[in-house]
Structures are given as C-alpha cells and as structure tokens.
Length: 154
Image (tube, rainbow, N blue to C red; front, top):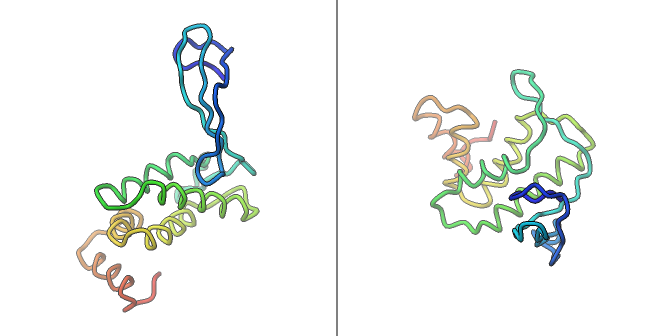
C-alpha cells in the first residue's frame, strides 16, 4: 500500500480488525520512511459493476458516492451512521448478487429509496425529491401519500 504522505510503497500493517459487520477489514498502517500513520479498509468485491445513467452513459459503480448521497439525505436527522453504512453494504450486496454487471441508475435509486424508507421518512422524502426530480408541491404530497399508504408507489 502506498503511503499517502510520502508515496513510499513500503508500508507496514500494525493492526487489522473486522469492520462494518465483518464485511470489511480495517487496517492501521505505518510508513517506515516518514513515520506517517493511516487507515485502510479492505472489502470483498464480487464483480466490477457499471452504472448505466439515464443518458446511456456508463460509469464505474462507486460505493463511496452511494454512501455520501445517503448521508446527505439523513443529514441533521437522528440516524445512526452505522445504520446508513449497513444499508449501503446491503444495497451493494444486492447489486453484486444480481448477476448483472451493468446496473441502471434507476434500479440503484429504487434500492436507496427502500433503504431510506426504513431508516427515516424525512430522509426518504429528501432523497425522493431529488431522485424523482420534484417540480411542484403536489409531488411532495404524492410521496407523503405513499408513506401513509394512500397511493401505490410508481
């Protein structure tokens, strides 16, 4: 592993332990050249996933981008960050186990909506407003109706 401080390629692992419900390994490292300490995370990746955007453009799947978007949705809400991490891990596992290497961005959005619905309803509405591109107040009303069970989701 390359040192992020001096770029030396000779770093040493000082401590390893499970992280994120055992789905990753957390490693504390030290660089013998500059003495810098840093942490890395190692995860199993079953296959390389590609996201197909609405425009047809294809980009590599980025777990960290998914995690950031969910953290934005739950910002200033009383939601344990570990629950968000577990939800993201669950979404990634679903995507990897689907057997597909190309995933439509809409499919990822639906999985995120399901996860947020069980985490926090306000976060769900926040994410839905961006994901579904709300233009009017009635769009919020429709999503609130879905939460109450008045209407079927799209």
